[in-house]
Image (tube, rainbow, N blue to C red; front, side, top):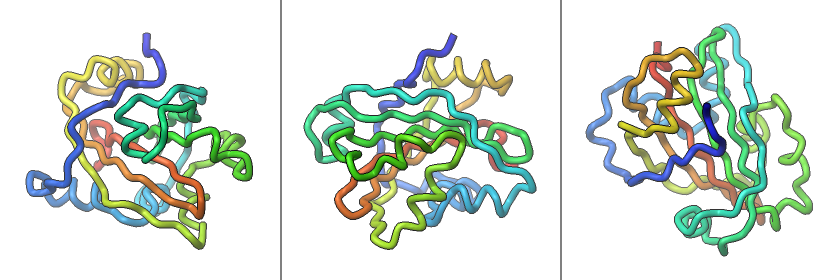
Length: 177
């Protein structure tokens, strides 16, 4: 049984030298991952796994430059051609959501479709990691009937005017096929 939110704390870094060309193409994409998935696959869909109000960990608060406070944590699977391609987790401090209620009502709409249309979007440097032996992630892979394998991931912090959000995207086994 998978418990949400998944704990995907890791050693995030900017050393991209160990990525092969296909991984680089996806993990270092600076545009919308949603747009890239839609361009690559003939069918695209989003499945919401969880939306909860959770207290930020010290590491998450540090990354967001915020106090340890309650945030909206949204977890989804992005599908391409009916195959799970990406597990995505987003964190938005609740105190920032008063004028941004759209984030509270996304439903099955991808977050990327909204944020990449925002005229004041600023993205901090991409960070990457490799998950190996992550029990919670392995449980998710089993639930999705995917092979248990190492998973490459990236993390971004976005600024939209006064709003700051963190997005982590884990590329599931077979994501690049």
